[in-house]
Amino acid sequence: MTFGLQDLAFYVITYGCQMNKHDSERVAGMLEAQGAYAVDSLEACDMVIFMTCCVREAADVRLYGQVSSLKNVALRKGSPLSKRLVAVGGCIGQRDGEELVRALPHVDVVFGTHNLASLPLLLHEAAQRGGHRVEVLDESSAFPTDLPTHREQPWAAWLPITIGCNNFCTYCIVPYVRGREKSRLLEDIAADAQRYVDAGVREITLLGQNVNSYGRDLYGEPRFADVLKAVDASGIERLRFATSHPKDLSDQVISQFATLRSLQPALHLPVQSGSDRVLEAMNRRYTRHHYLRLIDKLRTAVPDIALSTDVIVGFPGETQQDFEDTYSLIDQVGYNQVFTFIYSKREGTPAAKMEDNTPKEVVQQRFDRLVDLVQDHAFAANQPHLGRTVEVLIEGPSKRDEGLISGKSPKNQTVHAPVPAGLSAYDLAGKFATVKVDTARTWYLSGTLDPESIR
Ligand code: SAH
Ligand code: SF4
Ligand code: F3S
Image 1: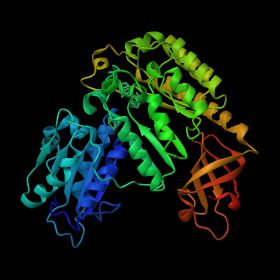
Image 2: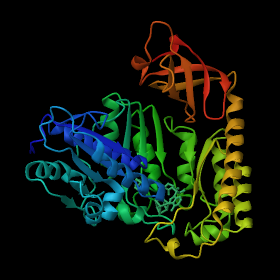
Image 3: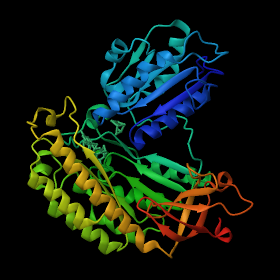
Image 4: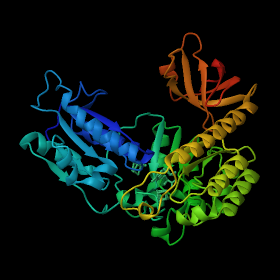
């Protein structure tokens, strides 16, 4: 079905997690299927689509500010429309619905996380008839599998295996804006993986808010290890996944790291806090001891595994001792990378009603101390790579210097190297090559690329 969006230029602006990035690829795929084409600036577009995130307050404020300032950007010359169409989707669209057009009257279309497929029709109606179109559903009726997708990088694919979340961590808005957890059939996931491999995809990242509980709703028990095996069997060269909840990470899954050829030696395992008291208040349903046991098991299976995590500083009622417990856990594990967040109150979550009287300055000091520690560990974790050779999946030119390639090691480290003579970083995107590392900094490795190794 076509909706009269032919030859319109669209621009998708994406915030938030990989789930949203993947949804944006679907938005682009659907609009292209309608004959519209992608551009990458406001000035050049007839329609702008915001794919939004509300996991922390800063993301909210920025979105409202950005949409508000759109009024000052003139419509592109030669546009067939009389006004630029503005659509807001993703998690803020889902949460705010009608409220969004009340606060920002120049927004034409609001859609949510459960009805991506409606976007072309909503845009079409807004273009034809003017006025607002707001459509937000409470739940998805089915797993949205068959929408066209425009992959940002042809050699890498995101493969959602679950949507939604049942965990209700007390600080988190995600279960309210993404709905209950739903798993996709194992056969469908395996078929997608095979299709990607046949099309030349070299890395697959399985996606879900808690991939470890995959299958509970469909099969009565978690079957994530089976997903890993099935996707590995497709012949994919690199396999990754996000995100893992520590309460559901099974021995069976851990053992796959030592067994499956394609599964990369890197795991993101959000801990959130090192204090049992805070973990309980967060409803995380594991203890510090349990978490550290998992780390031991992972390192026994793969001694060199790269570990990363998420931490929240300043959860309501966090005492100095609670924070010291977090600090010592982070120090003890020695992560390759830690994403640190200052707690942000989200209306509608249980934590928003908890007493929170830690002064802002104290939280900021704790946060700064933790960031210093994290950087020291990240630097230390990169040092053993000096003089070694790593295999890199090249993503293209480095953002700062087109004379350098940028890519990822198996452990997900960023690696830079000068482009070999006679080649272009753009043409090398999606290829594997080995790099001999001669510099190891906090956030990247760099060295010399062996042209013979390119494949
Ligand atoms: N499902 C994933 C990702 C959730 S959102 C998971 O469970 O790990 C990504 C990260 O944002 C979380 O891990 C958490 O550290 C952080 N986060 C979520 N809600 C937050 C809040 N209200 N304030 C600060 N950080 C938050
Ligand atoms: Fe949020 Fe917890 Fe679900 Fe992750 S597991 S999305 S932190 S509720
Ligand atoms: Fe943000 Fe929604 Fe992802 S709130 S973190 S974009 S699920």
